[in-house]
Image 1 (cartoon, rainbow, N blue to C red):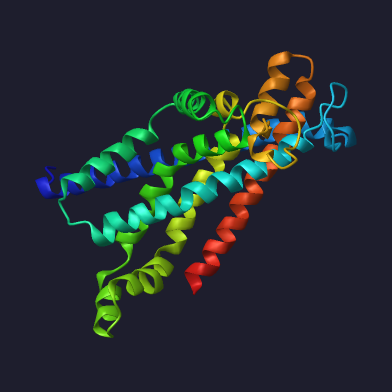
Image 2: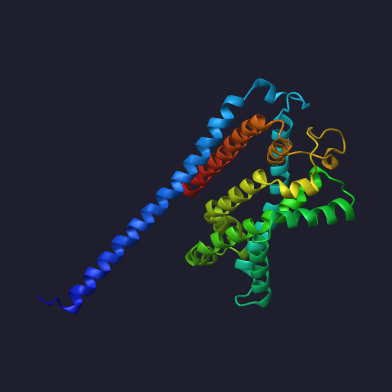
Length: 286
């Protein structure tokens, strides 16, 4: 029996769709399995090593406390985002709302930001050491590390904000202009609130990169396991959780404590992502 060509084509299309569907399912299953394995391995190896001494306020060679590094991580993240977030959002607003479409400068800025996203973090660390630490004489400090991390995450915030602004329908802008609102008021009262969930997603990505970074901060912030204090605390050397974990594991003397630090770092990242997702969900409803 000879089947018409149309019937054969439909059978081939259904077979192809079935194969692609199963490939997608296998990829999703493999990704989920790897993620569960990594998280489970860290928890199994790290939870038994979470001792009270690991959370002592002051670090010493006996307790190798992670508490100063935890506080430094929060300070580093907040200061870096305080520098990078306004710059990234305002730059994206200019690219989307004010710059002429097809402008060569806009294309140059976009190519530059995409290029910066692919540069290894250790290159940013080298730049931070040469410019902030040496040229500006800020020393290995919280401020040098924060500016280095701000430059590193700026392209992420800028690109995600740009995409979020582009996704806002033009009818929102036209309706605001029709009611007599100016350009600036339309951007800050209509466009930005509508794009806020997407902007917050970029901030979440930037936060994760700051919290998990070690190479760039070794060159720019240093590795002193103490909370910055005093009048010039911004110029004190600091150690974040990622750097703390790296140093403990590289020394080879406190590998178990490094696993415990990894658990705290994992919980911190999950807590930040969960809180940010909750805020983004509430903003999306409004």
